[in-house]
Length: 72
Image (cartoon, rainbow, N blue to C red; front, side, top):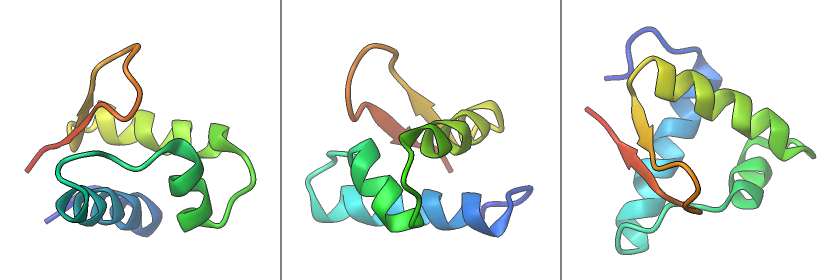
């Protein structure tokens, strides 16, 4: 369970997890996440991903596109 997250953060984490299950471990692109969140700017997605990473719900490899690992 994604304790300590806002509903939007929880929804994005769930979307990433489900997307990766359907796509052999490949994470969605920033554009796909923005579309899911119904925002026009990927900077909004970046902010949420930063929070998820800071709260240790995901891990990202810097400099590598779509390099996201969803943590328990």
